[in-house]
Length: 387
Image 1 (tube, rainbow, N blue to C red):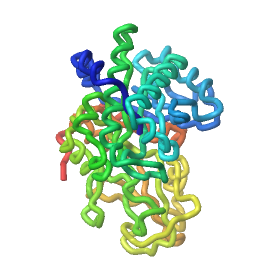
Image 2 (image 1 turned 180 degrees about the horizontal axis):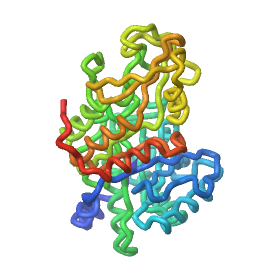
Image 3 (image 1 turned 135 degrees about the vertical axis):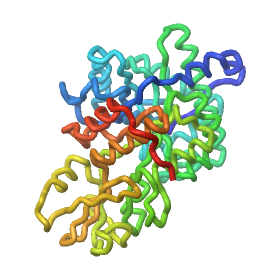
Image 4 (image 1 turned 45 degrees about the vertical axis):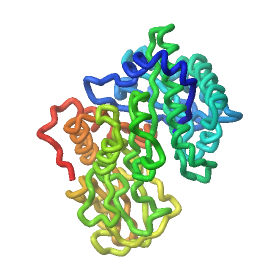
């Protein structure tokens, strides 16, 4: 997700302030939402300022070692989002840099103290220009090829350096402005990601680690269908993956629960040619032309009571739903209000920082976001299980 900065000498001078700001606690669960308009202009009333704690605007890019805007209307959209703070003074607006396709230059940016300083200088200018509250790093992924990006074995240590140096610079700025700058990252939910990072060190300099607890199963890479965002590991899951397993892995890697936000997908994955065994779950399937389905489209399918269309099923061991059409031989893994509520209870019971979701436009009716906020207004009923 991001890059790394500054000198060891500067780090030594500001360590106490650095640790104090990076380890801030939250009195109630956070709701972090990614907003990804691409080349569209955000319209008045499109974003609910009161439904989120933090907005991560996706994505800024990296060119010639500098952070730059990624899309044609970013300036207008930053202004729109920053203005929402007048409606909700507790709202913060960050820019997220990188992403699956734009992580190409992270390895080069992090390579040397000089390249990190150049990048950090550009970040400070960028944040000031658009009056933003901080930076979210979305490097996919350090030490790994991701979508075909250059990578190095030393990305592991260089990423730590970048985050440490960013925090030093942010804290220096805060001493002048008395305004905290937030530094967060989006983290891959796999053990491989943990192996290629130093999360026990990295977390010290971050306000939150946004755990991407989704895409555990994807049609393009998994020949079997499966839950792409299970809360718990399904009894029948051959891969034995889940959000709970990832939370435990990150905790074991040194990330405190109070710094983790649990990622929620506002979209589903679709497999075709799935025969009617176990209602299509954990069965052979193939990618479809429209394998990525926003929640608003899935809700229309779920509400269709025609038996030739989709039937909703619930996996109690994983605490997630899925859709299957026997006539069409289509299987869909997705999130709905019931599974969202279960994950929010998990966040409260395990004392995580809150939730993060991708992404706002996938649920224009606000069904899932409303479920999040309703869940966090309720008191958790007992401790959630951990498997």
